[in-house]
Length: 379
Image 1: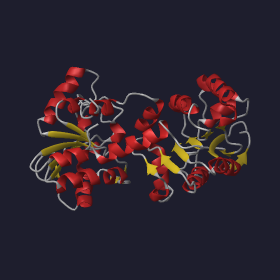
Image 2: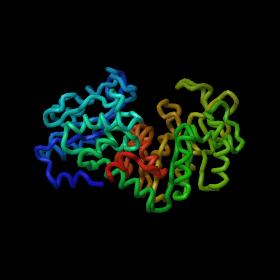
Image 3: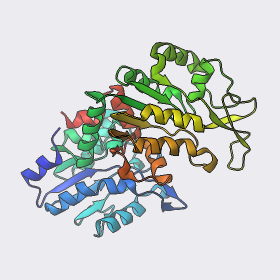
Image 4: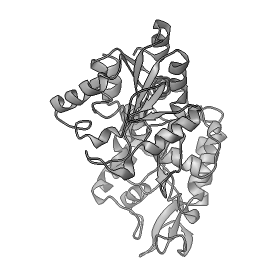
């Protein structure tokens, strides 16, 4: 890939740069609740500004289904971006030093499966600029007009964030330092099956928590009550356990509740009683996972250990996260809910080697899939 540093060495003064960013930030009560994704693109924007370029930023927000939705307008993001940059950001109208276009997904051609429709939209986007820079790692696994098609219509470069993410993922896949421990959580085994398959050949231990652990428990013949279950994945889990041996480590206790609520009655159990549901890994499991992390040289974590958004079920995720911060090795948080958990639980971002901005993109890279946005930059 050509990189932003190469573009800067070529010179961009007086040129218009179309920058794909991932500004898909969460909102709460109409306000941006976490501006982490805006902050990650600031170094690339500032480097281009300081080199004399006019920067036209574009992004998506949410899933507006190809039509304008005022609730998903990027106008508040433009205001926050301007505040963080310390300079006004013009909105919709690509003029001035920095501007931000309206939500790309308001146009159905952005996400169209029809190559001609995407190409038409890409043509309209690149008409605004001379050069294209992609710094939206969280979107590189999407074959969308602003991620894929535009890169074939202008000189294309990878921004600082994309370069860093790829460096980290290569370190996790090509020559990881051992012991290499992977921590996987989240709700569904099916979402993580491909990455489990891929990492079983590379990692020394796979620690599995979150809602997905109950499908593994079912495969072991344990009682799981009303806990989350993917019945169609039970046999697959049994096969994985048979193949992996002691490399897959499951929780030894869980926090069960009589209902899905903050005020629920809870108890720590080894098997979940009928009518109850498991919503977090238990304290013994946290200690077990911490012992497996002790001495690791490489750690990749993706997915919370429980329903961390509800206080009684946050201890498992917090405990495992704190254990990872104590690892004297290279630690990576794989974006998505894991990154959200780190911030929500008040853990210092700097305590990890790298916090990815792309949960889905990170997983697909680790699975060995071709990511359209990266393949376009490598053309």
